[in-house]
Image (cartoon, rainbow, N blue to C red; front, side, top):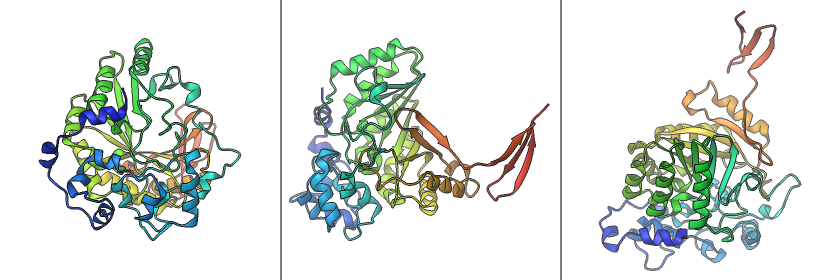
Length: 396
């Protein structure tokens, strides 16, 4: 049982694909499509074509982007850390002339990735040390993380699982899935399963349904979530067939990884709209990244744009100290400043929780600006978002 095989099994026939209405391509999508000989707008709508044509080499990306020397060196050396992988759709969002383009920074390796700081780790979240069976992470008492595959459409350059994504050495099989299911069945305190990877939406519908259906049949599993970046990097994957399958297993939640307002295109709006219309609650997870979204203005705009497409801001993560991540990581004070400029300055629905995943396996630790000025003898002196002070007295 392998993800690529499952994708092939679920792939549409030519007749089915031909019946799918086309979406008008943007100017940049047309520009990227021209780089693929004999490719058509119908191919562009085909998510499997997008995965097969992912940009993996320097020669391929050179056709679309004017590379800097730092990018050239990064691509040449990234194979030892995390190879490059960019779907043509996501590549169309890259500004070919601006090295500081926020999509470009997330997608194309840089020479900085090849440098390691002393505090950086291969497995910063300590997932491997909390893995009782292959593919399963059990850190919190009532929930588990189920890593069902190792493939993503796009390899984010700050990926906390770069140790495993795309390396092909942790191949999952029927036996490893069954061991994970048996573990969950035998641990009755587990009521919440987060399906992640890799990215589970790179799998075919039938294999993904098998996983969800099996989990739903475990009596004490009450809550299933899917963690994915696919609706952002490859929105063509969100098909009516996928959404209809997911809808059968309601309640089902989805956490989607957004980092910048530029990612919220008409295609992404449509994909999220289909999921929301199917009754699937959507939440966002954002990684705080230097040069990408480390300003209150950009972060506020992202949160507002997410609410407009019915995605509830959930987490802002401090970038994990993965190997070669120093150029992406901000100071903690930067994250606190962003939270200060969100709380009270916009609707509470647009204010996520800012967290650090405790390095080494400590789990999510929430951080917020200090609104308590003093607290003693039952008297709590508080400040609000505007700096004014108020006193709250504990009941006697």
